[in-house]
Amino acid sequence: MTNRIERVDELPIIFAILKKLRVQEITDKHFIPHGNWTGLSYGQLAVLFITYVLHSLTHRLYGMEPWLNQHKTVIQKLTGWKIGDKDATDDRLGILTGGLGENNEKSYEFQKDLNQHTIVAYELPTNLARYDTTSYNVTHEIGNDENGILRFGHSKNYRPDLLQFKQGLAVLDPAGFPILSETLAGNMADDPCYFPAWQRIVQTLGKTDFLFIADSKAASIETRVGINNGKGYYLFPLPKTGDTPKILRELVLNPPQIPQPIELEPKAGQDDDKARIVGTGFIIGKQMEATADGTVYQWNEQWIVCDSHAHAYRQKKSLHEKLDKAVGQLDALKPKSKDTADTFRAKADSILKSHRIQDYICLEVNETLELVKKYKGKGRPTQNTPYEMIEVRHLDLQYGLNEDAIEEYKKLAGWRIYVTNTTAHQMTLNQSAQYYRDEYLVERGFHRFKKGHIPVLPLFIRVPERIKGLMLLLTIALQVLTLIEFVSRKELSKNNESISGLVPGNPKMKTKKPTAERLLSAFDNIHLLIKENRKNVKGVMVEGLSTLQKKILSILKLPETIFNISFNDKINAT
Image 1 (tube, rainbow, N blue to C red):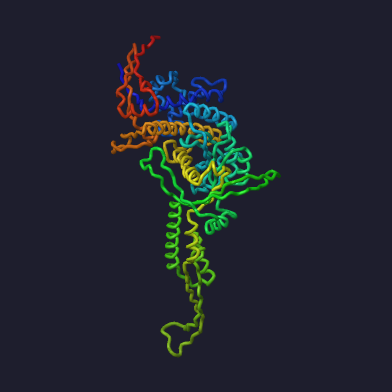
Image 2 (tube, rainbow, N blue to C red):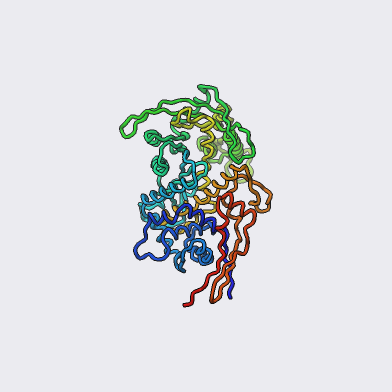
């Protein structure tokens, strides 16, 4: 008789959700392996890889084979699949990721089918979608593939010296559920991405009457015209370039109407049930006209001019900090012997430019010349020592604060213009503020990719198709986490409940908005004891489910039976 133990942990939960998502069936529908492929299908291998990522918190392909061998009995009992010893090698995973990423259109069709099923299965709201991009820097050597995705470009991670690729992500409110993932070349500009992304979201949702929210790079005339002509709705902040700062200044300093307070209603799960004032603003109507593709288009927009008290406070504080640092550096600046008034002034100007406050400090360099005796020869001079008169330049830096400019900056701090083609009935001042303040839902997905439980970096894959396929699988892993949060928070809110016991060291702490990571970690260290002899193999669950674990399964709407893995199988003699 031999005994061994395998960890069960949260594996039954992950497999149950992936089964409800029909990841295996939809993957096998869209991606067919070549004729010599044997063993697990693409769909089965994809399910195992996503589970491996969520359980081990890494995507390294070479690590999946030993991980699978450590949990082989548990996984076979949970899935009913017969898994071979070499079904999850890094070579096979490389083929899988390459197959998923080799054709962009096939990838979009796969995502559309998968997400359409998920929206129905989980009854996800589809009235509001968001889109954004981020970049991932890699330390790969520079290649010669001009059409590849690893390129030099504007780095959002402040590493322009490294190759990078971009990732676009679209999510649905309020779950933050990803409905579109696209891997783009690292040197691609963001502006052209938004309208095609909106079109793909339309195909997935099967409608155009949802609100599309993105950052200021989406506010180009071409994007707004395209969405409006497609009978869609948008909400974008105008970029602070071109004529926008001038227009904003005029509207804020000479408002056409009295700004009204912006009140945000408390969200579900918040303890405070009072509305809070977060800013002020007003809405004006605009008749827009633009030419695109040789055609003149006209449409109506609402321009939402509003400020955020919190953002204004941060901007004012930042300005004072910059002024203090610049003043300290100006006080410490001393002229060199070779400096002229122009060169000394240039040094002072460079200090202001480095802090971007040249409009708020006025500089003046005073230059005076003094004739000074310079004695010739060595030793102490006497009355008869020859000398010559030379000019000595004295530079004096004077500076002062531009109080008028500073005061105007404070009045404009926190103000922004947002544009939307919705009507006043469809979009109020308060609604517009609430919608855009939830932009973190996209950023949270990026955070999980960069510093969270689904880390993209470090990335060891070099083939572009495999990088695209990997990001597609990681996006499905992100979907699992967002669905866990959406379902659990919705259930707790419906019953006006909270849950405790999720925070280590503080078991009494309650929350109505648990994170997926906390919920899954509550199932750590559940084990299956396996006893094996020549005639049979027996599996017995070591630990029973705790009250907290049963509560979590309840709010996730999963049956406790998914943890019934105990078995007693006979071994056939050969």
